[in-house]
Length: 129
Image (cartoon, rainbow, N blue to C red):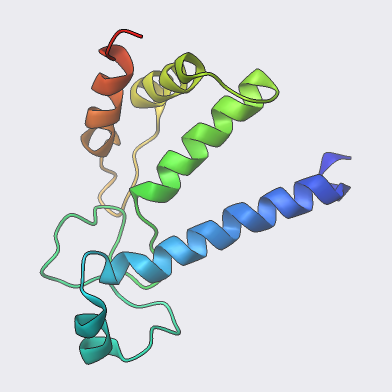
């Protein structure tokens, strides 16, 4: 069974570690390290997202991850689909598919099209090679 393989366990650990890191860094994203120290000291736990930042439509509770984790999972889907190393076209197709088929996300059931719009249009209208 695939879940019993070392490759699966390592990959799963990397994906979960990335989501945890994203959830830890999200609430302090964009802040200078001195401002982070002033507000929180050393960040050693999951923090709530600041109320003044309404952009976090996936939740403001400690442990909520950002669009970075969603994007990483979309790229992983392209890797799985191609059975190896996806091309730029493969990744673009995955973004386009996700844009059209993703279930609602976040506390209010927001459509992922809001955060995906930029990636969607870049996937369709890329510069010629």
